[in-house]
Image (cartoon, rainbow, N blue to C red; front, side):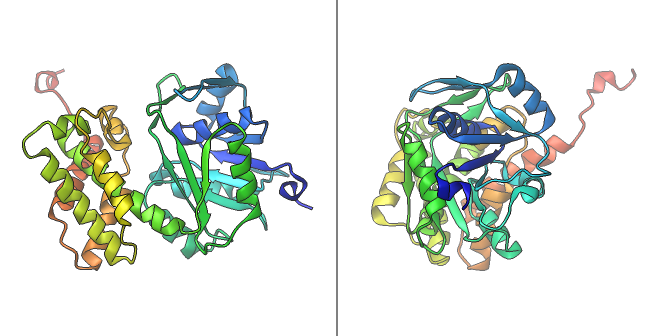
Length: 324
């Protein structure tokens, strides 16, 4: 009998940033058996100060169980991958020792590309998808800040078949009033979120401004809607046209006057951090090109973010310091 079958679900969360930290805090509040697999620097801070979450849905400050080397007898019923896309390869290597037969691997990354990688590698049985709605950020002091008045987690198997381990995970979150949902069509849900996120990241990074600020300009709304239609066109070409209701909800979010909504990609740019340009905008653009879908504004947005990444690689020297 596995831990999950006996009712004691063993959960390992790779990453204690925004998403991983939020879920971990809520699961710990629900009495779940949760460990964080993190790097040494993050582990030291968590040991010293615990995990701190500030949220309009309830604050949490709690000590946590920490793993820095997933070896030996460590195992898990469910491994949650809550890392950035550019850390995925390292993340898969890190969790490999605790992924046994029956272990579920739940990736909570933005976009779609990681699902293709997991499928190609044969690393997940069953193959699982998940999406998070709600803005989260990790501050310099290591605390997690929830920036929106809502948080929703949606998960499901790509086959649409039910899964007892995932259901146990969702049930545990519901005990502490987390909006945690099962979806029998998670691939379509992920594609809808992908089209929305690529639009949000693309337009806010391109304009270096919030949605409300962009909407306040003369051409703001038409440009936002153009980019959204381009991304929706790619989703449709891939076999996942957005449902009218879902598309309308996302249009409203993307064009709301006065909205302070920004993308995590823009926040990363403002803090001079690495970004997921290739995983989000680049992947959407490559799929558009493969399907012969015209996406001129998407191409501009992707080039803009790639230029930022190139700038981060360069070492700038002030002219007045050349003689030093």
